Length: 133
Figure 1 (cartoon, rainbow, N blue to C red):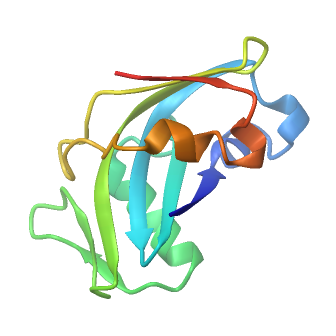
Figure 2 (figure 1 turned 180 degrees about the horizontal axis):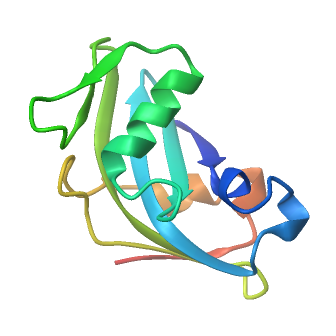
């Protein structure tokens, strides 16, 4: 499975990669379509809820979806897409550490099986130590 890393931090912090804080945290979701997995990270100040991350991801790619009745979850209409789960993240750039933990109230816990190995295949994270709790 190929893993694509998407980080919305640049949208929250001035848009420049160089201006990203060395240490940042937020929430993430794990989406899948076919044999491609998307790990989408977003600072909590930009998207307070996992559903907002899924919505932004879908809107950016013209993927149809809608919030459920309680607006707790953004559901994707295309059955080829699945939200495997979500959690929280912490990134320490100078220490090259990534921590993934917790779960999403809307989508449940992310799927950790083989995740560390797939993350280390992502160019931006290949030199990081990955802690999955």
